[in-house]
Image (cartoon, rainbow, N blue to C red):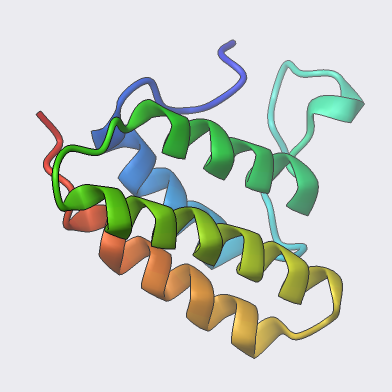
Length: 104
C-alpha cells in the first residue's frame, strides 16, 4: 500500500478534504498497515506536506503556494494547541486554495 492515498495533485485535493473532515482524532483505521502507520494528526499533516511537494508553482502561483504551505503549518500548530475551530478554518482555506491550482 502506498504511504499516501494520492499520487497526483488531483488526488491530493481530495486528501485535503479528508484531513479537514477527520482531524484531529476521527481518522478511520487503515487495513493492512502497521500500528505506527495508522492515521494520526501527525501522519495526516506529513501527507499534506508531501502533497504540497507535488505541486510546482508557476508564475503568480508561487505566492499562493507559499500561503498554502503556511496555512498547513498554522493548522497543524493550532490543532496541537487545541484550537480546533481555528485549525479547521485554516484547513478550509487551504482546501479552497489548493482547489484553484490546475490538476494538469
